[in-house]
Amino acid sequence: MAQVVVMGGGVAGHTAATFLKNWLGKEHEVIVVTPNSQWNWIPSNIWVGVGRMKKEDVVFPLAPIYNEAGIVYKQAKAVAIYPEGSYEVSKPYITIEYTSKDKKGQEEIVEYDYLINATGPKLNFGATEGLGIDSQIGEYTVSVCTAEHAKEANEKLKDIFEKAKNGKTQKILVGTGHGTCTCQGAAFEYILNIEHEARRFGIRDNLEIKWISNEPYLGDFGMDGMHLGSMGYVMSSKLLGESLFAERGIPWILNAHTSKVEEGRLEYELIDGSKGSEEFDFAMLIPPFKGVDLEAFDKDGNDIRDKLFLPNGFMRVDAEYEPKPYEEWKASDWPSTYQNPYYKNIFAAGIAFAPPHPISKPRKSPNGTVITPAPPRTGMPAGTIGKAVAHSIANKIKYGESGKLRAISMAQMGSICVASAGVGFKSGQAISFTVYPLVKDFEKYPGTGRDTSRTYGEIGVSGHWLKLALHYMFIYKAKLKPGWTLIPE
Image (cartoon, helix red, strand yellow):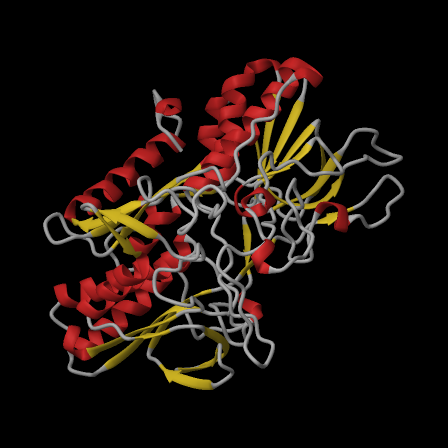
């Protein structure tokens, strides 16, 4: 019997674990190690953050699902990886520390034949002084990165709306909290939903809503923007983003690195080296991501983190990591099997794998400050990669050395994105767009780097209905309801 351990129970990890168990059956063991007791459909957190959904609408407990599926579930955080085993334990293993109430703090060894790192990101609030919701780091901004964060954000937003109802002008600032952030899309959705709710409550005139981002232009999203086919024309995501904000009276600050946050005020540096500040009554700023804190040791107890991880904590896979000028970057630099080059039974999926370079052109200010969006790897790409890695491991377990690895690069992968621009059966809107490929390939698609016949978008109420449908469909799938395998990633 083979043992497959999946570290992480988010989109990538949950997808990998459930498909593996479905394909391998009772003959082999699938173990999920995650510190979380609940699964979260993260794209709907923005609706929790404006009070249009409850936290309970976007989460569900993992234990009953895994118990029914025959997946071993350990509510714990992974601490260290021993890919060669040790003198005490012959097989490869990880050490874990339980986070569940009944075993909190207890440590355990979990052996594996194959290991999937799907731990997702560590929310690196500490990268910017004063950023975040933790009083030990900074408690001046809110977040929508988790369901609980979004719930707390809504509580504070309600206070802002109440003051606006009483005629007091309030300043709202939404965007990124560091020069290297990713997930601009979540902040983009959130600011549009705040603006929509402000109009719904009749308080828009009493709110000053502003955007601040590390993007070089609106609509970059860490993907170097998009050229969207629409109604026979090709429109840039820059034009779309600027139109949406201009129509809603939202000014923007771009090419910005948020360098310090304090109560009601933040400082930032622009790409030209100049500095400025903004005052706010409410700020939702996405933190930068880094890999979770994991140690790694060889059989003799020597530190081998450099074999498994890059300095940013994300896992080293089959990518081209050698530094080279931006002009020499290629689509082929990106990984396709997500297999660690030193330990072939270890894979990474979703945000946990280390990308070889940004997708957007790297930029630094004259002061040496990096102001470049990191590449996104959330949502559909995370699920797609999780399933591909599961397929590779299932093949290896079933067919041995002849089992083929499932290869799918982000330079050969498309994605469908639906970004909410306000909730409402008749008044709600969303931007729906497809991107192919996610990583630009200028050799295959000269000019734009993408296939404009497969990269297109539109905005309208139908997009909102689609996003709402996806909310229920993917929670249905994640709960392993009948026919769940037929629902695409």
